[in-house]
Image (tube, rainbow, N blue to C red; front, side, top):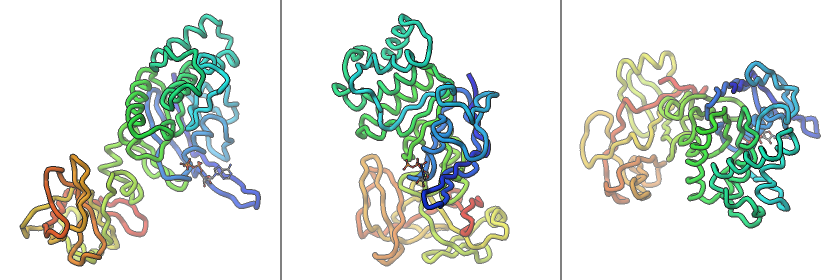
Amino acid sequence: MADLQLDDVTKVFTERDGNEITAVDDVSLTIEDGEFLVLVGPSGCGKSTTLRMVAGLESISSGQIRLGDTVVNEMKPKERDIAMVFQSYALYPHMTVRENMSFGLEESTDMPATQITETVESAAEMLGIGDLLERKPDDLSGGQQQRVALGRAIVRDPEVFLLDEPLSNLDAKLRAQMRTELQRLQEDLDVATIYVTHDQTEAMTMADKIAILNDGELQQVGTPLECYHEPANLFVASFIGEPSMNFFDARRDGTQLVTDQFRYDLADETVAALGEHDDLVLGVRPEDIELRSTGSDEHSYETTVDVVEPMGNENNVYLTFGDKHAESFVATIDGMNRVEAGQSVVAHIPEEAIHLFDRSSGRALR
Ligand code: ATP
């Protein structure tokens, strides 16, 4: 078993008119043996291209991809010992589940037939599709088809497992169920895995480590909690978390931040962390804002409830400073805590919860 390493990997596509698109820009990443890395980012940020380069389905413009000590840049997909599962399951419709799962082994290995049967049956058992082996794909549900696609990859016993949005064709309930199943499966298989998604919930719940891409550039690599609590920049801060972090443009005035809506006193150590930066963005997560019925202590502001979005266990409360039509920000509170549109509430923004970013570079300052 081996680590997978990407060193300064870049992919430039040249369009027909000669225009160049840098789809992946100087990405360096290590996925350790047994690690589950989720590659996440908005549509078009370069996730699939990255995965396709690792699989050998796309050439690399510059940089190096290594599996253990072997540079795989020039190796054909078949030679790489990497299995990939796509968003569209790409099962052969005329073949049974058993044939779909054994086909790759028959084609590309010299495994004896009895061993192929054993391998396929044990993978099918592992995936809970042992009783579906003689069926054709058309007679299976979406979730069952997805399991067959996974099974086809597992039987090859790869060094690296690549999954490209494998759950996006499933309904929400099945997706949640398959998320846990996939995690369990990856733990059992214990291989380096890259899982691509644009869904930050999948990233947060499944990953050992998240790599966040935007415009082909890696923004941050860390555990889900690191990316959530210590976002490296504005992009990561806005991408991770639901509802999104609230942002207020802010200017520093001595030891205060001044936004269009409020002034915010800063402790000495926060001022020190800002250095020379005074054109800032103040960020605060909805769940870090406390709502109180009254109070005028530090970091507390009079607001009006604009809209309440009940989520069951939580309420998302959209608030404005004064004017009803002013831009709102959102606080998430316990679902049992009732507030109503039009009501006046005091929003408390604790200093330990605030994030500060340099406005021009977007870089986190604290
Ligand atoms: P999605 O989540 O929508 O699948 P993605 O993050 O996987 O997006 P990629 O498919 O890797 O993004 O695409 C990255 C960029 O490269 C996009 O701007 C895309 O248009 C461009 N691109 C991808 N493949 C090609 C190609 N064969 N020729 C030219 N440009 C391409």
